[in-house]
Image 1: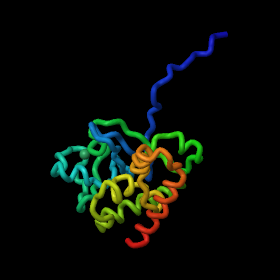
Image 2 (image 1 turned 45 degrees about the vertical axis):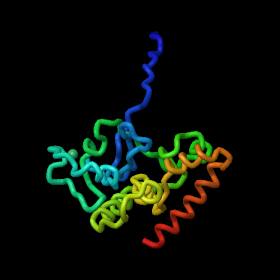
Image 3 (image 1 turned 90 degrees about the vertical axis):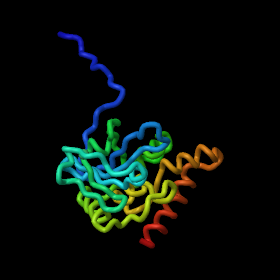
Image 4 (image 1 turned 180 degrees about the horizontal axis):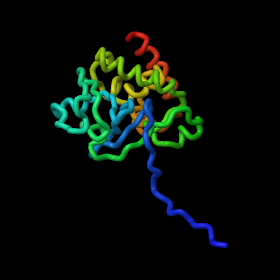
Length: 189
Ligand SMILES: [Zn+2]
């Protein structure tokens, strides 16, 4: 009878994205994370407003002939998207209490659309360049990814910043206001 083997606990379990997943990573030295939609075949569609200011994407053999750029939206390989950072997967449909306890911009309580609808929403926005110009507060890479997943434009990392600045405001009120604003914004698109 052997002793049960205790597995070494890793700081974070590696997770592999499935097509239609909302993925994100930290950006070196940045206050904000970068978000995109994994569309399968090693490719990610994302709103790359911040990267645009840095000029053209560097050449990449893995992107091959699959890379597409249209205005500020681009489809690139996962290596180009991550730029050396660790891949994280954004969770949908999390319980409210879990949402409140987790870092803003990593999960939300809304349910995701089915993967094929998420991928077609991201692909359609890329083909039409249909998301408008990047704006950190109203039209950022998280707004883009959450919109593809749910049809609502919300950025929780921005809400997190607001919560830090206004400690008296409960998260639920802010989130509700942002969702309402998101519906207004998407309705006019
Ligand atoms: Zn690439």
